[in-house]
Length: 404
Image 1 (tube, one colour):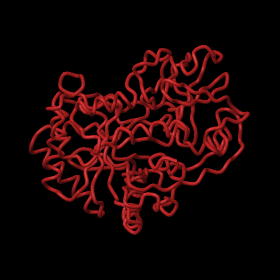
Image 2: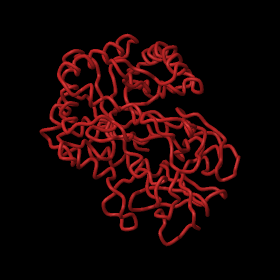
Image 3: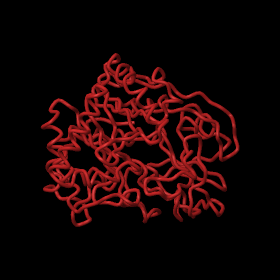
Image 4: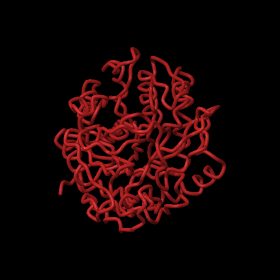
């Protein structure tokens, strides 16, 4: 088994299992055990808001030995302050940060603080927009990380020069200012690790297209790694077509003409923008997305089906329906199912690949994307087969490692 791919199974042990089931089956199967790696960078993410459900003792630290674990979930608010969300979520995070760092250090894992996210990127443009504000913001970030003995930060700005969740502050100079932030960070905290994350769009420059190498130069020079979020490339479970979740390629799939970038295209963008492969991390996630099919599954179109224009209810983690997002809009369902739920609900056999009698398994050869379906639903996700192909492509491309 490829050293790269062996890391992917670690994600299963990091996720909580559940029994919610849109397809109607309650059969439970145990999760496959995680496996170890050697010689490559590995980054894991621990979601702060799940601290009540996933105890720090259950994190398989030994599989991240000499790697990184990110305490993810804080974001900037007004007056250079930070929050993990509600009062209860802030209390929980404060209670868990010190034990998290201690556990990571004890297991020779580098603890990092994760800042931002889809709902936490609203003010990045504002804070990074001028020299004085940027320096104050960098110091606030560094002070927060050092207060709890983290050894660096991961910045998830989704996305520079983009509305993001719908109401982000934005500026044509966002990518350049992000580079100045990285430069200032390294001046203030030279030994601190700085990892930045980017989605399938890459970094968007002043013209609204891919940022130029000149615009990204300071980011390329000062970020230790760029974590490529190679998933959610097509979230059409809120649109009128189904499609891949994490396509190896997006440009040449005849049955999916609406698909944009895949992993190959994203790597081409990052190469154009001046990022060395040795600084790139290929990121995977521990969930899939469910579509509702208003019509019976059409065998002729495979993964590209007519979909209902809203995501159906997902599993245990899809619990934000009816709450308000960062733009003060009421959220709907996301149709998210954790990989452990897919296994525990009996939709896949214990090997994580073979289908059961509950659902039919499909495979899109162009995008290298597995999916499960019946006459009412289609679920896109990654399994050991697809992850092996994609992580092998990362290895052949000279990337530094993977994140989960």
